[in-house]
Image 1 (tube, helix red, strand yellow):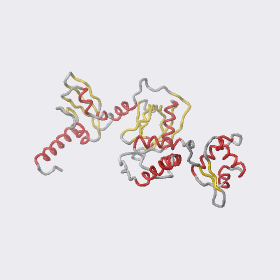
Image 2 (cartoon, rainbow, N blue to C red):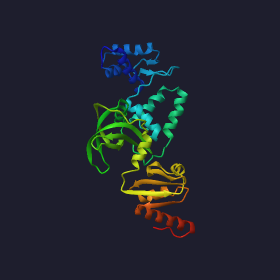
Image 3 (tube, one colour):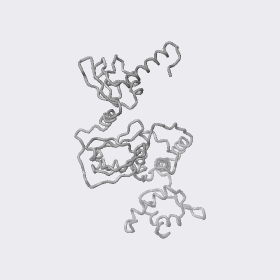
Length: 322
């Protein structure tokens, strides 16, 4: 720590008071790496800044932050700050774990609240039992912080990536945006090895190295739409569906991940996409409020036939098909 910067050391002192209410002068000095006298000087600096620091004398005495009209400033690490954002976006459920970035940051907020409000908040935190989202895949906050920084600074990165099957490789990419979709975090980027657009799961990135090279993202970048379009192509089975409805009407009823909707004429359109799960694809098509025909992809045709037979069996009270 910079010995010539008392303000920086006073901020570290504030952090210690926030994290350890009742900390003794001896422990505070030890954690700061200074003498007891110097530790008391940093406490004085905080008080001069109108931060209420209370002290209690005696063998069980120590320092703690008071609950004045001006709450003490909150000091978040990048991982904690991003953890809070992630908690809002995808429903993090580890707020009760004080050792994690979200729980730690929430604890700081609670300690800065007026007593009456803090009591209510802590009661909810203690007693609430959220149901976890089993489909979510939450990445490491530190990794995500580096990727967001690279996107913001428009710097090329070298990623260490691990697939679901366990294969690993290094790849250099231009990171365009980080996108949250259905509880999963994706890095939308340009891969230099493939010279093509790619979307990598952030929870599978195990290493990030920021490089000196910079880049310019595509003009009028639409990260969400581009990710949806990317996820609709490149799967095992190519699909083409003709729908007896205007493209605008069909587009409102279909997830973009199914593929691209193209107008054929005023009352007909075509859906072009791909899938590795024909039954799921057929189930999504069933939501279209218009007649449609699967004109290519025998696998989706068979899945649609099976789904139709199962629905008919359910409507007539017959035994459900296997």
